[in-house]
Length: 422
Image 1 (cartoon, helix red, strand yellow):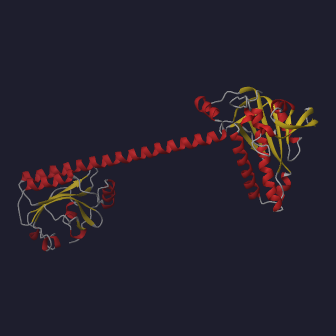
Image 2: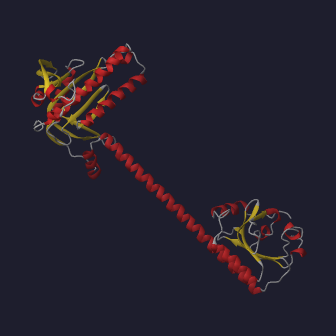
Image 3: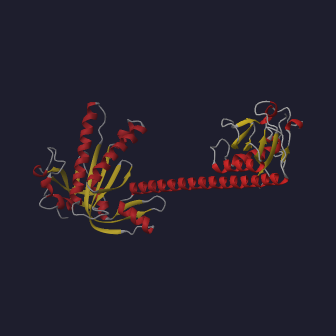
């Protein structure tokens, strides 16, 4: 037999693919149609099959061997049926020159009778057939053939409903994936937002699309800046500089977070944080002092190791000032939580006028923390645009309030009988 090719074969195969029916598991709806077709036509066998580029694949069958699921297209009788828009009725295949040499007729199943109806979509593509067969010649009445036509239309209805269900399931799957992506993206955006804004500020921004600036009558501002940074950079690869700065600032982040301070930003090799903002508390000055001591302790330990390796030290100046600030969010596309005011300016000047490896605090900060910390008067220092400013060196937590010999961590007594009131 020659292979029969419909005129619209490429489009037909594309339509067949869209139904996602090939090589699927048996379905009772199609099985019942083949059984009904065999009973109506009084035939021993019936099948629903689809024709792809190389084979006739059987979706449902009645009266045929269970292991028979396909046959090559070139010997298929149904390949001829899909080229017509009407029923193919052959009472005796042996007498029909189109089929009398087919192995399906001369050997194997030895089919003698065939009646098939193409399964045609609304767009006119014949995907396969509903057919009845017999192993001896037979005649069908007009009513039987018409019944077979009606069953073929019901088969297409069933097939179309099946496709719509698959499309619905696919749409639901995509919607579920889109929902999951949206949830994941929202979680990621919220995580990123919390990385740059305090939780209460992020919540206000999400709720109101803006953050109202607030005045805080008492907060403690801490500046950390590496001295001799240019000299260090000149001896290191750029990637190594960035990597080490990241390691330092990450460690600073951990220390700051443990003491309820809020990191605001880094500017080059400078690091800015504040205590008592955006959540007011009574211990921000002591918290800032403890942070400064632990940051300096971290750098001292690191520099002892670097000295053994003959590497330049990372020396820092730290300045702390306490007083009123205004805090708020700036930016529309890239948000920044920041503080402003004379307190911030003085803290920056104190740090700039400081000594590498030492922590310098203002007189206001000294008044808040002098009962719990060892502090060394530095005297007045000329500060740019501020004139003479009294400053103090913060050395350590007093031994009676310290949990470690170095005086960087407070013990239980530090906070008793109650926390210091700014």
